[in-house]
Image (cartoon, rainbow, N blue to C red; front, side):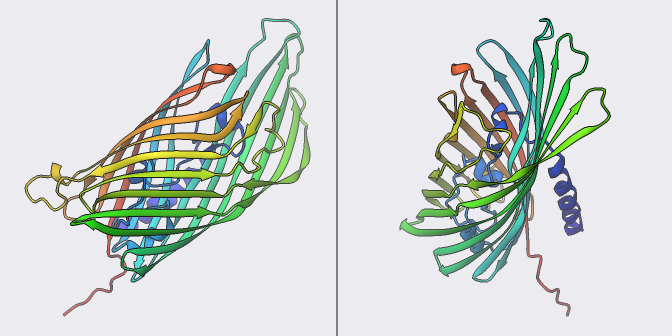
Length: 409
């Protein structure tokens, strides 16, 4: 019965993921939008640290981890986000609910496989310039929506007891639409311009994980993953219309090839499996070629993305029979990011704190995960926008032996 429920959830969430507006950030106007964290909530609650070869939780950050699974694992997650957007003179609040990931991991002896659907980036903004009180002045409204999703298939292999390798193939696809409506005070008809981009492309990544005992039950964990640079084809269309005119004028725009940069992630940690972990993660990414025909600007450029994260978890007693609270996993982390965008000569940064808890489901290895993230992105300097955000996340991780043939005596 539970498998039928999970399949129905997959279809429903997959459909919803295409219709959602996953961000309210004005910075999502640039490049391919607001790039999302592409890991599970378990890792996100530790600021993205994902160095342990977990046997019952999916690690979407490194395909080598799939070889460590001992049970079939299905996981799905989503977030309710609130943010306060402010400049030096104004402030506004925004809310949105997002689908974060849907994935399945399957153990196969020394091999392990995983596939799923993950949003890569989101575009979602509404910027209004109101000059209607001034005769002859132009008022405008700029709206953006859409984003990029990916379907992936990954395979991991256990070379030795403590050493895994893995590869990942991803198909990126999506649509980004921006609408600009302009009206001149005193002029009867305004104009609307709609730019639409259909995006698609393949990407590949490689990963390896190694762990070794260094003192009694304490182990050293390490992780390395590399995503190769790839192309993203953008098929573009521009539509112009005038208010009161039933005809629209469609102008095909030459297709563009965006360059998604390579990315290197290195992680290191120490801990006792199923007890505690403290780890760090460093991520470096090239600047790529991300500007499309409708969002190139003289005051905007792209730089190398960098992220530094520190996080971990504590599990008092995973097999306690007397205390349910002792079987709860407590997680926390800190992060610092340069998101790879420079506006008005200001490098846009994102700093945050994460907290989370994994609640075990009785009589199973499955769990319910909660997470909260507090952070700040951008600045009010140089006529920019600062975002103070709080993200509330929820995920389910279902673990069972799905592919075992029943035996009857």
